[in-house]
Length: 381
Image (cartoon, rainbow, N blue to C red):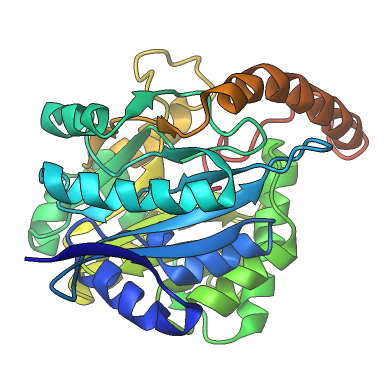
């Protein structure tokens, strides 16, 4: 058997995405389409494929970014929710990461950061990461965040009646209340629906004091992800046809992810977000999904004073399970520049934060939260 890695040309992206979609560890954040979304924010996507006798057997979508420090001609790699591979096969993992190291040398990459879609309880994969040269490092990327360490997930293979039975009584009540009151949920059909969703998201951000990306970012998600079938926007309407809530759902293979959610100030008594979640779960089941991911929650689920406790309580009501991931891991290619990164970047980040804070204070009142700290907000970087 011949095992090789190769960097794909962009013309070969269909080969890469087909493998990602069919693999059990496939994730929308590892698709080339998501790479194109991130390209609008300064990242360069690179597609690396592991092949055995010419057949794909592992993959990783690398996001490459130049270090934002004057005079430093170095870059970093980030693979959100990568790699996509048999995570318990040491030889395959070693071969794939050796391929990353080879192109990292060419690019001058300082390190690769990964935050795999693997539970924290998986000790076998933890040992494989260590064998492959990774070290645990939960400091993020300094200038941009990584994926949440805790999420709420729901096995949606049971029939709908069983799913409803497993929900908290108050959650079931609010779903049925919304239906009785005439609330309806529809799928977006045109780009104007994206504008409607973003208007509601902006209203939510202003009410709950958290920051959101600009419209152009969501437009790139629509343009890159929706035509491929990865992204769906759901809009919730009041009985008189007014859009009062909305969400962005991602779909790949047998998994669905609730990415962003929002609700307007009007008709909040109609409980639109409960019905919206239920309709998204139903849609996911109808499209052969077995897992519904509510995305990030706080790992501290006992402190009711935690600003994220309300988000946890809302998602928990649907009967899912809290999942802790294995965390962020770095594979260092240049120890000298890595030490420089860990020392210089925090100072650079503090400067950027100070500038952003001044700008934020002109737009939001004191007490502004980051994206995701609202009961309606979800985030991904």
